[in-house]
Image (tube, rainbow, N blue to C red; front, top):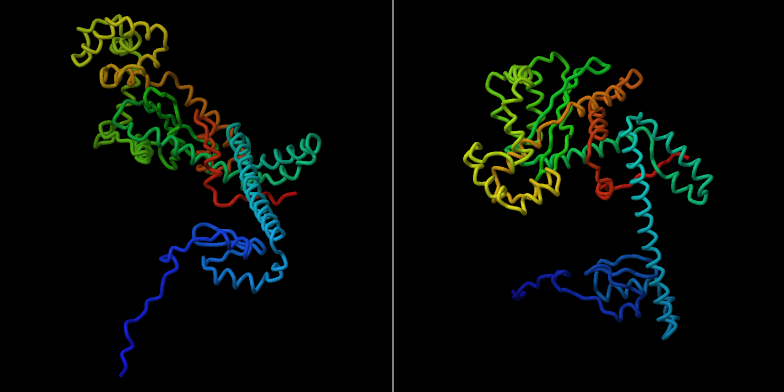
Length: 402
C-alpha cells in the first residue's frame, strides 16, 4: 500500500496575518474594515476574508459593470463612493447621538420631577407643554422634542436609575469609613399606609468633605421595638459594609443606650466643652492638659506663624484639611470626629416633610422602593451622573406618543 505521506494541516486565516493592499481599493472598490475585513463601497457588504480571491469574486459576481470606469474616471468614482460611505456612517453616528440626547433629556426631567416631589405621571404633562412651546419657539425642531419619552412607566424607570446611581456614589464615599469617625441619625414616622418608615442618615466625612446624606429608608411592617429598629439599622449598615460591632452588644440594647444618651444630651455638654474648644481654636488650649498623643501636635502649630496665618485666613474645615495627615494624625482625627456631628435635626424634618408630600392620600399606592428613590433624589447634595447612565444603556428608546 502506498504511503500517503504526512498530512497537510489547513491554514488558519488569522495565522497568515494577511494585510490589506492599497491596490485593491482601485481594482475592486473596497476599503479595509478593522484588521481582518473589507467593506465593499458599492453595496456596503462586509467581507470577512481578507483574501484577494474572495474580494475579486464578489466584485466580478456583483459589480462587473463598474469595469467601464477606467483611469482618472475610476479614481473619481472611488472618491465618490468613499464620500458616500463617510456620509452614511456620519448619519448613523448622528442618529446615535440624537438618541442619547433624547434619553438624557428624559432623565433630566425625571430628576426634576423627583426632586420637586411631583407625581410620576406629570412627565406626560411636561412633554405636552414642551411640544406647545416648540410649536411657537422652534416649530422646525418639534420632531426632536416629540421623541422624548416621558410616560409614567418611563419616568418611573428613570427615577429608579437615578436613585441607584446616587446610591452607588454614596457607597463609594462611605466605603472604608466604618473605622473612622462619623455620626448616624435615626428618625421614625408612620406614612399614610400605616407603615413605619425608619430613616437613617449619616454624615459623610471624606478628607473633611462633609455632607448629611440619606443612607437608607427601612420599612418596618409590624412592631417598632428597639430590637426591630436596631435590626433595620444593622441591615442598612451591612449593605454599605460599615462595621459597628462595638456599638451593638449581644443583647441588642442599643435603643436603651440611645434613650439614656438623649436624656443626658444637654446635661453633659460641659463634659465635652473641652473637646469643642480644642476643635474651634487649637491655638488657645494648653497642650499639657490634652492627651499625650496630641500634646506635641499642638505645640508645633502654636509656635508657627504660618499655621496661625492659615487658621486666620481659612475657614475651620479648610484649616484642618490643610494639616499634614502624617504630622498631625491625632489632631486631624479629633477634628474629623467633631466635624462629623449632626448640627441639627433639619435633615430629618426635611425628609419626613418630603415623604408626607409624596406618600399622600392621592398617592398612597407609591411603593416603598419608589418612595425611597424619591427621598434619595430629593434630599441629596450629590448630582446623579446622567451622562454616565445614558452611556451605559444598550438601547435608547424613543417615545411612540404623538
